[in-house]
Length: 317
Image 1 (cartoon, rainbow, N blue to C red):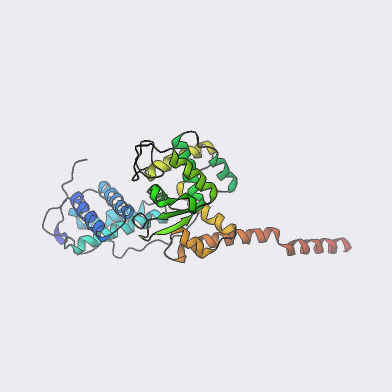
Image 2: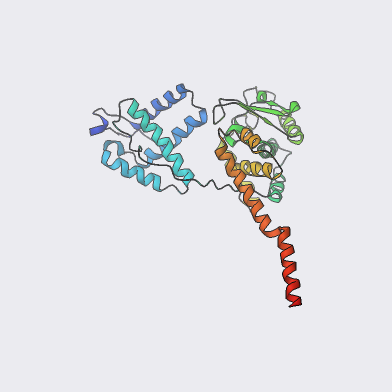
């Protein structure tokens, strides 16, 4: 796609700018600030998506806000809305800091309340999912190991796909999530089960002898980093065979809820998932507490006693 002839006019300044050039400068600045590769990629994707939808808005400040409103309104979920708002707001803040813009049109926009609806997958579906990859092939074993690893550690898809062999110590059952691939920019250690360790060692033995240590663990067949979109597409293929939709993030959610249901500690889960605060982790806790509430309503011992007492009273009456 060729570059657009976007200019900032009126309150945006008198010089001509192209949004593509501004975006590249912004991304260089954010990388220099120490933002993670994932964060920089999110900036690129969201800002690009907005300007490709509204390529001429910067020369018409009066239409810019309407375009932003339309763009945000088209978001189908609170999560998507908040991601668009957050990434665009940071970009326009930078324009102000650079003296290119006199104000941020997103300054007064507020995030939508996100109820944090998590969709865990039941154990029978997960068992069926694990039976689908062809473990006789590298790709199939990779998929099997990646599903196992995510269920075992609740690691984010992006983080798992960036892991190198040097980050993994199968014998000590430890995997290090380095700070430069961590969403929070803080390194952490996750622990794996013996069964996951066994399969990871098997996968590492299948690596091409010419692949060096900079080739990721869960790479593509040609030794390249597997993208999140590719992993999502692969999960869609498995979902079609299952007859049940399972996404990479649903594996993370399922890992968290099953961890708690099996008696895991909420603080341990927070550290495992890489949450900076308990706020996100508590959503999983509330979900499990909701399960307990439903189970209590159905199976309370008192319910059985009361029903039996009422039955006896009716017979006597």
